[in-house]
Image 1 (tube, rainbow, N blue to C red):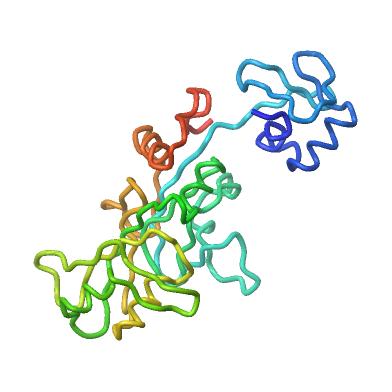
Image 2: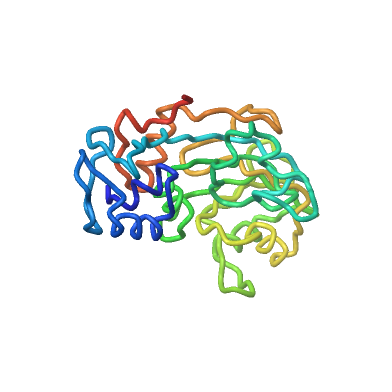
Length: 248
């Protein structure tokens, strides 16, 4: 890991500020002052100090929250509306959400401090699947399902569902969609484009992680297997045991 990234992950500075700290001779690695940018350190083995204070890296944390409708996916709101962080303990305020859900959309929301994996999970080039349960206005015909997978034109370019289907036993106004881009309000916009405005929208799955039976407004830690599967889905090597998600 580059030294300036280590400083950032330890909460000592931003990466840019970390570069200035290194150049100023305020950082030591294994007792030696380091002033060369790009110096690499091995977490858990090398001793990193800033102004004589040893810096430790926090363990990676991963949460699954069942977001209820009416709650904002944001760190704070000027209008003092309820946010997803109001549903979590205060010590989790530093975690970042993985893909925003709009105010009325419900369901699975991942939060983490593992920035590299978060970036890959949300970047369209990795094609990570998001699965939604959708209730719409009026029954959906088979031809409409085919149109959703063929693609529709939105104001920011063409969009399509990777898969669209009606589950066995579901009502005719309910369907499932899988998308991979994560564009703003994409499900709502493509359903409006085919003449079926959304009445209820629930994200059931993000990559390999599913919502399951978790109640609305509740959260849980991801299991070790779920974290490994998330990393594997975007080609990220598993972290060392030191960095596994755990509560300290």
